[in-house]
Length: 438
Ligand code: UGA
Image (cartoon, rainbow, N blue to C red):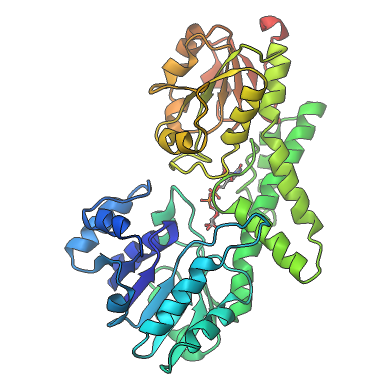
């Protein structure tokens, strides 16, 4: 198929590259001409394992190209995929500005029948609104469909090429058939629904995963008080197939560009139809509070934080990404600064992005993990990058002024800790605690 993908952010670029990999001819469009130039030079503007290799290979095969000219891209295409951003407005509602302007442009460019698919995460009813915007600008026949995206940052290529399911929201058998054929090489789990349900499946899925995380984080907080171990509890729960083992890792809460945005947007969507989504409001609040558990543990271990040097390992909202949007590290570091501590930070790749949003001159930036811990009064692990798990903890202990380790991700095993003498504070598990250490 000839496919136009509009928007070269995470979703657009990864989908475009993967549709090309399936043998389609894909043109990725972005109005940011600078980004298009970068892509044409073979530079991938996001960090995503495997993406560059796949993009390069498909450009070489002549199946993938980039342009900032939507009209030109649409001249030959049969399918247009909208994958532009829907960032949150201050109210939590999704900002539909980019979707609306793309819809208007598509309406003007439409020269023959095309199927228009929305992949961006959009409030229920958006497909119909976009249909109206396009119809107002063209006499050509076209159809709308919704194919929400479920890829995760850091494993986006893998998730796209091996999805658990593909959800197709369509209101004609022609549109449903086209999209089934396009996605059939990826999975047998192709679900066809009406368009509104497809839009809702995306929000409901993210909200449910966020709920699992906040749930296990609250269980972890209780485990700390009753002396249980949340990793054992989650393991025991996860064996029940009705519950499932995934997304039951307790820690400092979720971040990133999806869960925080989509949970708040769904609360708004419900609010707009006079429904008070109480459960999801609690999920958001629990998630916000969870990150400050790191600060509580530091205070317990050190008494006060004034003048303390606190090493931070990991700034990205999760490993294998340089994305720091809504990363718990942001507010943890702000709070450390408020309490008079000096954060000494390291992340393998997210430091440039973090510096852009948190440029406080009191933060010390380090190129190596060991540089960050030298002379530190405590070490907080905020992102479980594998490079931190490989560190020799005895060497880390020797480099620190006080051997205090706050493990915000329950990343270290007893074996890794053996031999080092840390006061060790995990999440929802018994602390190996030496209160005299401060
Ligand atoms: C999430 C969903 O997992 C994807 O299915 C969805 O397509 C995507 O949002 C989206 O809407 O675009 P992503 O935000 O990339 O993907 O990352 P996840 O791997 O889901 O992690 C989200 C956050 O939850 C991270 O901060 C992670 O550390 C945290 N998390 C995850 C936990 O704290 N505990 C867990 O058990 C799992």
